[in-house]
Length: 175
Image (cartoon, rainbow, N blue to C red; front, side):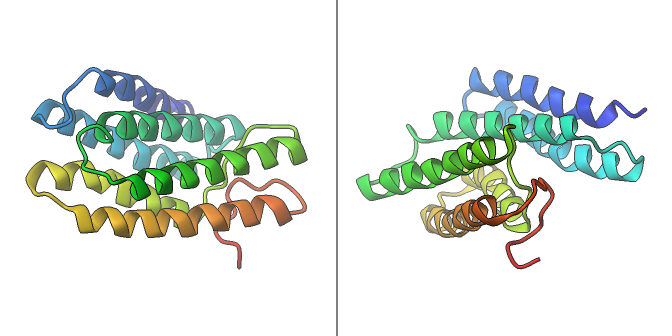
C-alpha cells in the first residue's frame, strides 16, 4: 500500500514517454495526458493520506514533473506560433528553474525542487493548456502562463537561495 504513490509517479514517467510518440493534436494524446495529470494529483494526495510521504517520493514526483513538462514543451513548441520573444521568455524561465536545482544541489548536496503553491498553480496552468488547445486556439492564455511561470521561478530561486535547511514542501517564500 505504501508504494502506491511512487507507482503513480513512475507510471507518469512511463506515460510521458508514450506521449512523446503521439500527436499532441489527437485524442489519444489528450486522454493519456489527462491520466498523467490524474496521477500527478493522486500521488501526493495518497502519500499524505496513508502517511507514506518520503524524500524519494518527493524526488520521483519532481523527476516525473520535469519529464512531462519537457515532453509538453518538445511537442508543443513546434506547433505553437511563438514569436522570438516568447521563445526567449521560455528559455529564461527554464534557466531560472535549472538555477534553482543547481542552488539546491550546491547548498544541500542533493537534487530537489521546491513544491510551492505557485509551482502547483503553474503546473495546473501548463496542464490545462494542451487540453484547452485541443478545443480552441488560446494564445492569450499562453501569456498568462508565462507571467505566472516567471513569478513562480523567481519565488523558487529566492527560496532556494535563502532557506537555512532544505524543505522541499515549503509552500511559499512568505510562509
